Length: 199
Image 1 (cartoon, one colour):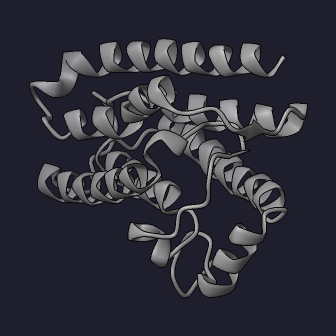
Image 2 (cartoon, rainbow, N blue to C red):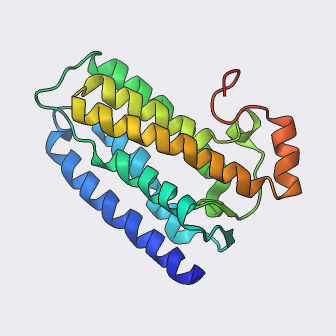
């Protein structure tokens, strides 16, 4: 069952990422910052493919959160008729900052990255010195940058659902990882889950 779930997770993310990139390509020549969003949301595919095995949660609820939180941001689309609240340069800056946070978190995890909660070794270097879930912080920054330049009711609702799912997902990951003494030590040293000084 675990091996099937592992392969399904990889295939699921690959297909969603391919559809997402296809949807962004038509507008990337007008708004080059969309390339940063594509990289941010699709980089996990490579890491999923090369990751090493580890103990995974096999309960339906954490799996649902992982898949839904991964799928929902891949449903947003560039808004031809939406509101652009910030210039492309500010959107690009937020996307670049979020992508930098994402990449640093993924580099720190490297082959320990996954979608469903799993323990492939506790990492405490790089951005993990500041928050316990820096990858999700990076996602929030890129998604806010995109939304500010492509505000539609549909995009806003998709991101609100995404952010709620991500917060629930963090809760499930914490429950699973806190069983490990190394992670409990990390949680003692790094007080905040997502935003330093706030949460």
